Length: 239
Image (cartoon, rainbow, N blue to C red; front, side, top):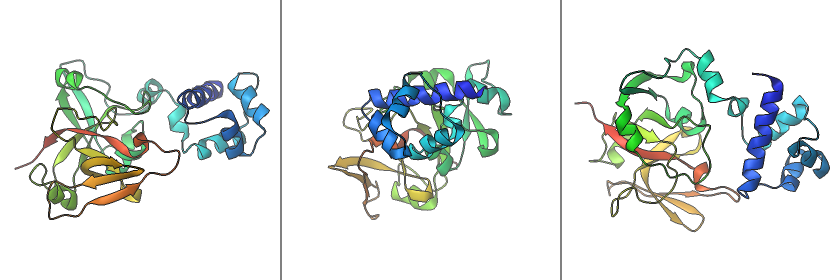
């Protein structure tokens, strides 16, 4: 992939955020320490950015260069098996930190590969709060002892959960049934809980009432998609 293509992808991502009113050209200019005309000319394809300027943008917007690389390009270079040609889809089992923070998952991050019926995955409805077009949609993580017992009996320690990372809305998937979500939790990766919104706080509620509720304060300028990794849409428990 050429440097020019990376610049174009960065420009497109910034314009998408501006269109969603998550960002302004002036705000971006202030974040990276440039004059607004410099940034505006970049967004309008009248000039390019230096490597240093691109690094500043990526840092300010909490992105990495992997966010600028097309998924198809990564898949061609990674040793992860290509999409299956049969009725099953390969879904990657990863650590919670990887599921929470990496849009495209590369080979060295994969713990295992599990197969799901393509027809099952196609039936699952997405509901995104912000665009995740560049994200691999489905990933799996193993639940630790604390999360497993806090969501008992819906989960158990060591359960493997399928996460739809294109579902970051709090809209119930089924009426009168709360969704389980994987939620970013500091450097610990992802925790699995019910989620409610109370003002600027996310209330993470366990199923097992003997475990405490926890609160995550949403920072200014952040949306649900910055905290919710995705909806838990399948649970596998080994016996």
